[in-house]
Amino acid sequence: MLAAALAQIEELSKHRAAHDAAKQLAPAVVGILREHRFHNSLLPHLLGGAELEPAEYIQVLEALARGDSATGWVTMTSSTSAMLGAYLPRATASLLWGNAAPMLAGVFAPGGQLVAGVLNGRWSWASGSRHADWFAVGAIFEQRHVVCFVPSSSVRIVDNWDTLGLAGTGSHDIVIDNARIAADHTCSLFGAPSSAGAPWPGTPLYRVPVFGLLAVGIASCALGIARAAVDHAGARL
Image (cartoon, one colour):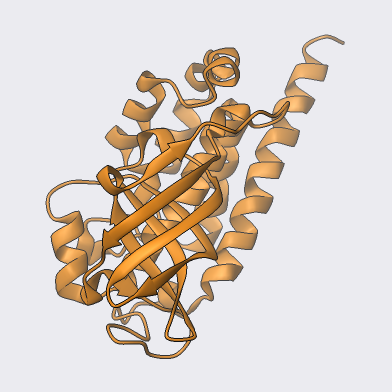
């Protein structure tokens, strides 16, 4: 996967301006992510993911962000969201991933309320929202934080992402109105709600705190952006 990411740096750099203008990744770039399954970097092997060690994950994100900052960022948010598949009931995770490699957009902050299996809310900064197949969003359920997995067909995107930096991430607000969420499509990192409480894979990656991987993922994107800036300056000396 690292070799594939390094090989894409030049190609990704060609899409920077288009990403900024469109406020989303180009279809060709989304195709690259799907082909190489970069967005499943942290998904369990048992679900068809790469289950990368953190050291290699850092290098993959750095390479992608070096090519294009928005691509690196969306890969980071999508892959950390997909990692939550390890916290869903295994049967549900197997159903969601199956033979496909769905792309996720995620907002962990509890922007919604899950009441009697019905989800309502609004979430900000849903990076990669324009091409996500599923959304993993935080909500409050019986005074506890849960993450709900919601198909894109139940999500409305509010086009309000207007920024000078990382415009191509398409980090718009999203709204979900009266979406019915099955109990087995929720999970939690805090204790044990109705459907899950701990990751089911017994492999070392899932002993690493999710927020630790998120933190190094953000830093990796920054490193890639910095490397691209050094490349840009060096080419003009």
